[in-house]
Amino acid sequence: MPTAFVPFAVNESMNDFGGGGPRLMGQVSGQMRSGGGLGARIVGFVIFLVVLAVIVALVAVLIPVALVAVIVVAGLLVLLFAWIRFRLWWRGLRAPNGSLDGRRNVRVRRPGQASDPVEFTAQSREADYSDHADQADQADRADAPGGPRN
Image 1 (cartoon, rainbow, N blue to C red):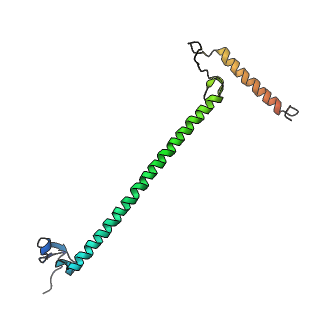
Image 2 (image 1 turned 90 degrees about the horizontal axis):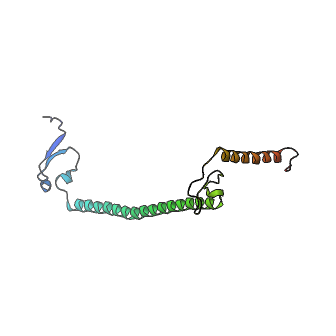
Image 3 (image 1 turned 180 degrees about the vertical axis):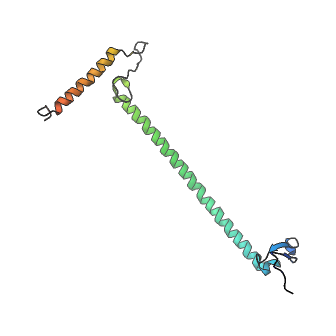
């Protein structure tokens, strides 16, 4: 009498694993269903040890690599900020009126100066602009045909 297809077969002989239970057909070999021999257990344990050793080796290698990467990135950030601070300090030494970017119309109060900050007046702005205009005129005259540079 033909038997109907049953996706789960009950295995009664797995005494080592609690007396069996439903298992997918074909999922486990016949030897393993019967508990497996000593050789199969040794091979399984050796495979487990190899996988464990590989995981431990990867972790042992990756942790120092990650630490070195973090230290290198932190060092590069420190160097970047130190370079920025140096450039600002260097510009401050070379800029007129103590401005950081060299603009002439920035006024900086220094020790010993009057306590009131210098106010911008229309006259002082006009003087600044006319000074720039004079410089531009001189540059135009110098570049003109027949000028001092030609």
